[in-house]
Amino acid sequence: MDDSRQVTVEIDGPVARVTMCRPDALNAHTPQLWSELRDIGHSLPGSVRCVVVSGAGKSFSAGLDLSVLSGPLPVELASASDADAEARLWSFQEAFDWLRRPDIVSIAAVRGHAIGAGLQLALACDLRVMSTDARIRVGEPGLGLVPDLGGTKRLVAELGYSRALELCLTGRTVTAEEAVVLGLATLTVRPGELDDAVEDLTLAILAVPREAAIETKALLLSAGVHDDAAQLAAERAAQLRLIRGRVGAGE
Image (cartoon, rainbow, N blue to C red; front, top):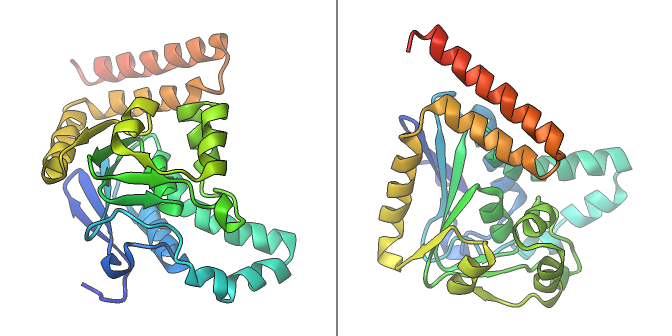
């Protein structure tokens, strides 16, 4: 393994295991880490159906590496043209955005802390399995920033506006138990059972025919923006594609 890498990926048939590998820094995020995540998304083989995202060591991610704020990046962004600055920020967001693609189901395996950018990475995943020792927190507003890696949309979608605002502006810590109640965690398990629980969930997803899984995820993603008529039309179109696929395959 290249020791300079901050993220590794292991492809095992239809499963890609993406691991942040900065355990000594509690997998704190840097522009390099985001670049490597983005590259993984771009190069993912078409055979992959499930992506499992985890962090090496005792924590999923403690959030943004604070050295980034004292380094050259803020000055570079502030002095760049609007177009160049937005392009740079989009390159960071792109590292997270691919996890919502309809052709894959992404699962975050969260132990320890998921703070700030680490929480946003977990929220970018479709499903979140948390160990009971997990603690999550929105950290960006407390640093004078906003959750800009897709976190605002995900939080409102999962929690509603009022609760999302409360968590963002208080920066309070949410336990794994509360995360389940709020809908931020799909399920919680004891720390020693996390890997097995993620494996069981992955196998259950892989048992569903791929095209049905893709169409279903796409419909659920569109449900929040379509009105009833548009969503019903999308359901009809998806169902027809699946039925024609079955007939064409001779089933």
